[in-house]
Length: 228
Figure: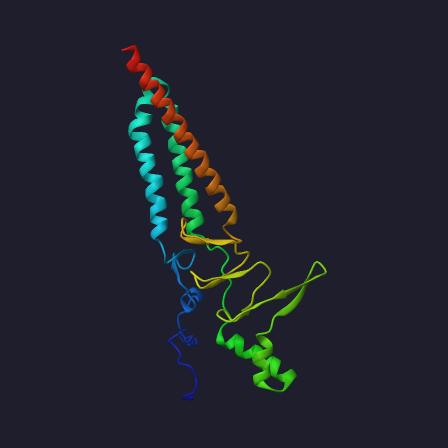
């Protein structure tokens, strides 16, 4: 048997050499984010204001259910507490969704991809130094017959697509970047903009619900005291 042949087992079949474990892309270029659930969840490292958001929602809800709902459920209807609980669960669920989803992070170019691009550019220009300079220049593309210049991101080593921008807090380019919202602990971009809008509207409805029945509770309490 040739020593260069792969080892065989007793059944005579060749054994497949063990492959090195795959490295997830988010572990290669994590930026300033926190990844969990094998990269399916992502949040910013600056989580202080996000915890304040959770504390405010939970704290106000506890006070509302402990004082207002306990009185209104007896005097008016227990449905007030039930609807309030549903709104609270919905608000918290949307908050977790918009905070933990990938906002649209654009993968960075690896050094191998950058080297291939430099070699392709150098084959045309004949100079590796001018090839590197040409790669970093803005690139013009046509979108619906309208010329658009794609800026080069020196951190991510890519040409950013339209409406993409680099978040200085998360240190990543985000597609259709709107802003970095510290209240949700994440960027607002292409993949979570809809959830962000739903969260803002849900919080507004929940706040109006709490304020309305808090005022009703005060009015009913004063009427009860005046009648007694």
